[in-house]
Length: 162
Image 1 (cartoon, one colour):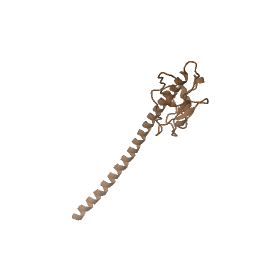
Image 2 (tube, helix red, strand yellow):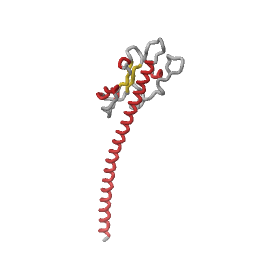
Image 3 (tube, one colour):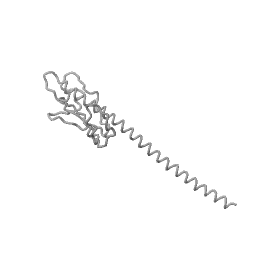
Image 4 (cartoon, helix red, strand yellow):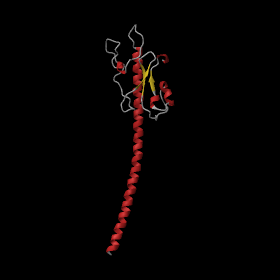
């Protein structure tokens, strides 16, 4: 009788172990799915932030260019910091509230689009990731639909295209 009892217990242990293993595998698969879901949501939020920040910087560059003091030629800013305090004016002129970091890269540094005559006419992300968003862009950013990476999203100000 004692031997029969021990066989039942050891048989139950094998079944319990198998059940626990199945629960762990199913939990792992569910967590992978949730992780992928949250990763996609996070990337979409960073994309939206990239569009917002890039657009703000482009508009600040336009304000700087168009806000040349009377009698002085229109120029692009020499650095992004010039957008925070315009060095061409004696009074405090801000074209941008703060320097926004690039949300798609770890270091937050933007790539710069330089103007032929000098200065910065735009920015772009240095990220080589493939964008999730491929359509529904505002008119000035329709070229983004063809982008292969975020670095193809160039936020530039071209005065002749006004």
